[in-house]
Length: 361
Image (cartoon, rainbow, N blue to C red; front, side):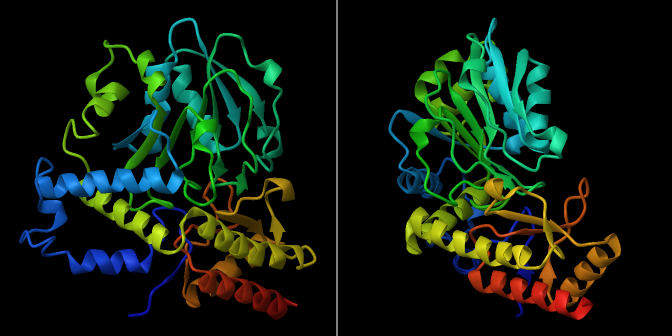
């Protein structure tokens, strides 16, 4: 079977090894006579799967013991609400850095629940860069500072994270978690939808400092209280068992290929291949992001005309490339090169881009 050259922005490519491993156990997991998705979430067999996923994530990201690892549902979009609901307490302000559509949506939800402020924004430039902000502008009564580490639509990414803050730092890492080394202790809360680098859609990872849990009021709706999930090891209700099993397999694959540092080196090579084509095209391909803000996960670019962009995408589709259309809100082209996208596939895309330019000339 020919596998697609998958550059989808999410749900995204999964490692082939993961799919093959899941296939082996599809009808009979660990001699139970059942698939993982048929197991009781209260069974010892599933409990091992659940805890293995959490342990692997802790090991790969070196998550300290004073952080809880939660496996939730609802995607990052639900976290836009849960974060202010749990930690934006009365008299406090939620401080946001706007770098794209997802940070805007996070802010919009917080505004419904409490007072907010925008520390910095690159909206006026159509989010072509990651803006800097002065730590001295953070309000004294700030509950947290919220950032989005990678912006899938615009192709920008924080190269370095804020340091020395006196308030909790919260980060949406849905599209670049596990793609590069990370000092978890810089953050008080990290959240990520799984469907880019961690597994299939349906699982959301939340890494939260234990002392931050103290802010969650007992009056919150049960399922929207972080303490509910922390106290029950994310087993208060039926979790997405198949998704968590596949998450565990993705994490095992990451271990097998050498961990986050090895993955980061390959990601750097992949991104460099495409940015070299863009930079060497004499303006035929124009990157959306400024060079010092470029994402290693989502390479966004346009061609000289909409007609050429359409022709490029049509020919790419015929050649077997999938998911290269830019987001509907900005147009153009986008190559999402998450961890599971191979260096070989990215190299093929780079060659296709070169040939297409030569063909037009």
